[in-house]
Length: 253
Ligand SMILES: Nc1ncnc2c1ncn2[C@@H]1O[C@H](COP(=O)(O)OP(=O)(O)O)[C@@H](O)[C@H]1O
Ligand SMILES: N[C@@H](CCC(=O)OP(=O)(O)O)C(=O)O
Image (tube, rainbow, N blue to C red):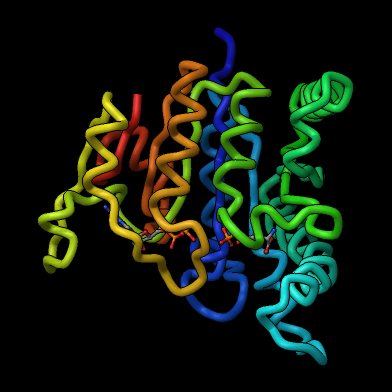
């Protein structure tokens, strides 16, 4: 039977476990899950974390919030991020590769074909493509969107079965319960317009897009008949547990 294809989007919040440095433990947790599922699923990762990785090592002589400082930090952090993936994944027998893309690459027939062809060869040869925005030439995701849209565009282009967006909540909560000690997860969504009413404009400490950018991404995926699962990536084994329905998360179909 053909393997199912999963596009896994990992934000800085998940990768740092909401701290100020990339968590090797979290990257190992993700690698172990991919290794456990590799006979039935193939994985393509869209990973943020370049800026967070750089901040572990350097402080640049400019204002941290300037976009071009973020671009420079991403340039410094990206090879470190890939090194950490490489070190942890290779211990688990997994091979990694890096692809840097920007929105404009999804607008041209030739560049789209190049992305598909490259990634299909990588996946066929058991290499896990780890994609990030090419932050030197594009600033869309550093400014607006958590790599969520990049993940959705990639999911559609590569015709995946499931888009998993890892975040720091147990999926999308009902607006009425969001401030409760145990907020209630909306487990199944078929109507994105109804869901829109539940979304607040709050964001987490490292986040840029909030829940809205995840809904926008789910809409892109849904239009291509791809399911989006919004899962709490801070939880150990979050993919394995979601596949077995052992944790609350939001499925948008
Ligand atoms: N209905 C909702 N359910 C859950 N989280 C919500 C909701 N509305 C807004 N949010 C906010 O969205 C945040 C997740 O988005 P974001 O901060 O961008 O994180 P990430 O870096 O994981 O993409 C949550 O931590 C929460 O503050
Ligand atoms: N390309 C950037 C990601 C930009 C971003 O805002 O994403 P996220 O860390 O998911 O909020 C990086 O790798 O740091």
